[in-house]
Amino acid sequence: MKPAAITQGFDTRVVQGGRASTDHYGFVNPPVFRGSTVLAPSVEDLLNYRQPFVYGRLGSPTTAALQDAVRELDGSAGVLLCSSGLAAIALALQATLGPGDRLLMSDVAYRPARRLCEGILHKTGVVTEWFDHRTDAATLREMICPSTRAIYLEAPGSQTMEMSDLPALIAVAHEFDLIVILDNTWATPLFFDAFAHGADIVIQAATKYLAGHSDVMLGIVSASSRFLPALQQFHRDTGVCVSPDDAWLTLRGLRTLAVRLRQHQESALHLARWLAQKDEVQAVWYPALESDEGYALWQRDFSGAASLFTVILQPASSDAVAHFLEGLELFGLGYSWGGFESLALPFDCSEYRHFPARKPVGPCIRFYIGLENVADLQRDLEQGLQRFKAAR
Ligand SMILES: *Cc1c(COP(=O)(O)O)cnc(C)c1O
Figure 1 (cartoon, protein in one colour):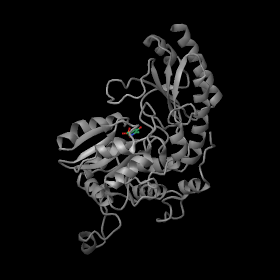
Figure 2: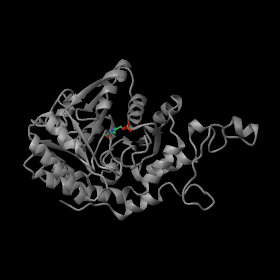
Figure 3: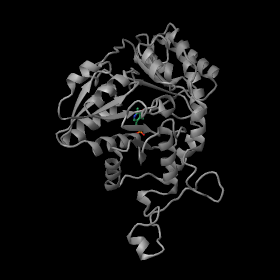
Figure 4: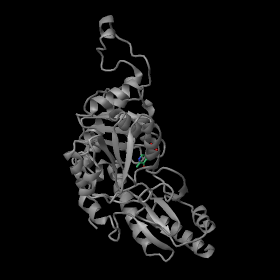
């Protein structure tokens, strides 16, 4: 295992990003600009949209500061803010795809994104084809036809944490001039530099690590200069906007991203390794573990790991799983992740995947490791496993 390779540069950039452009009388942070109307000094200015901000829906100094900060971190041409991570995915797909277009989507993508493709996107005439996350360059090349317009990537996969050979897939996509859309929520720009790897449009659920405190819903679309205008136009024409309070909270969360992630990663690695050795545990799916089949790809392409992994327990009744999880004192039961608090989520992917590479024969639990003391978390899990063992 290599140590967390968070460079000094990144720490500095999360602290400095987006702070250069505005003066707030010396105060470090921008205020929350709540507002709809922006008054103009003259008819001329009003009618020609001369001011930097002209209407609340189109942004404020607060949202602009967050956009600037993320743009600098991602190294993209521009950033759009959406009301959730899923809304960001919808914006990216709807703004770039139209009737007759084909989309290639990784079979391990976030489930609500799948539903979007199979439902609304399908109704607008966009056909989605699923590919196995293990697909190699040659196989991907064969899947591409003249109407294939974009490829949608996510690694590691949602819930099941499989890695893909992102550089190989992106290289093929570029051969055919496909739009490369990548959901980088797990890694954040800290652990995977999506634009340096050739992504054109990068999605992040800022709801997770960027905001980082389980108190915000916010999505980010970051794009290269080629696709930014289409995204901006769709964003503007559909009235997508975010609350300045949520933008402000995300900006506040962002400032501590590097230091939080370092601790999240350290605790998660410790607990994942420990869990992998327990009798009650059949497998741990986490690309940062040497034993994981995605380890080599993760090691090559990523510079760190999120604190989200999956544990497969030994076969047991759902009662035994409930005994394990409901008795946990420090792990909450709930959806989402990325806050300061640890979470556990039982799940079953077997119903909706087309290429189920990992076929668990026991209950699957996704763990999110928060910022609690790691020894306390381990004790909590140990007691849970004892309950599980007794109830099996
Ligand atoms: C949570 C998540 C999303 C969606 O974000 P929301 O803000 O909850 O809509 C998208 N992609 C991934 C990988 C996620 O984990």
